[in-house]
Length: 331
Ligand SMILES: NC(=O)c1ccc[n+]([C@@H]2O[C@H](COP(=O)([O-])OP(=O)(O)OC[C@H]3O[C@@H](n4cnc5c(N)ncnc54)[C@H](OP(=O)(O)O)[C@@H]3O)[C@@H](O)[C@H]2O)c1
Image 1 (cartoon, rainbow, N blue to C red):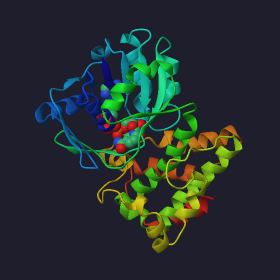
Image 2: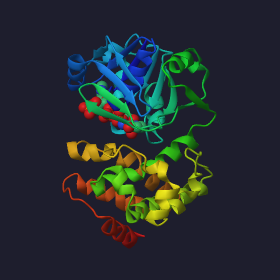
Image 3: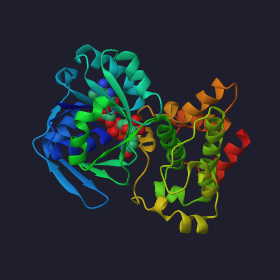
């Protein structure tokens, strides 16, 4: 049995696709999500026009539902990983396989330190999923699921294949995770802009902020010998230069980046709106942590992290020129 632990956007979509492909899936999540799915069922759509329904859906709200799991997909936000791991440690059988399908670079480690009798494998979800309400989960962008190569996953490769979500296996997942993290450095910028992603990324000053955050991280990664994997058409180390291009050139050269749903925003924006903790400590905060491990600073990422923390209590929209000015003062 496959259990999705923390059934929200990613969990309902990935687990739903697995269930639609014929795999036995149990979802474990919050009551409000259980109610939504009980009322409307689960419907999965994607940017290519797929439209699948999952019926019936086994959705539970207590950790005990994961007791019989052979494979657990952990899809809680990073701040909830330790708590989820402690709950799972109480009930999972030894040898069960636990996959982190989360952003950031340390969730695998957190799970491994608490689930010492299970096999923990680190994965990465490259695409965006939006809960459109009424049980509809939409994959808005392309990309295949990535995972650390591990023999423990062999029995499940077919299920992911049948779900239309084949796993790309990597001998070293860390460079893949860091690449995703470099892209996620836009999350606070998007949240502070209070704009949909497409509108934000269309403006050069916001892109300058992202370029500065990425350039700072790239320099640190270079210092510790991590070479980010190439996730998009442009190698990661060239990304800041592309972001700094004038708007008309960026629109022409990076049309794919702007080809997102016109209403799509980052989950950090959603978290701020809902008054929930954000993943800032696991994204920009991770860059700051890397810098301090080298006895250095990461002023751009540090400032962005501070602004998000302040936005938790004092929300305002930052224009591109304002945000860029503030970050330049920090450099
Ligand atoms: N959404 C995307 O497009 C996307 C894309 C790629 C990667 N990711 C990454 O995937 C991860 C999950 O993101 P998401 O957007 O799917 O988050 P999400 O929608 O917030 O889903 C997580 C769900 O898990 C619940 N949860 C937390 N702790 C739990 C526990 N102990 N037991 C049961 N349920 C629990 C949460 O409830 P509460 O809110 O009540 O805690 C929430 O409903 C994050 O690391 C994110 O960065 C997201």
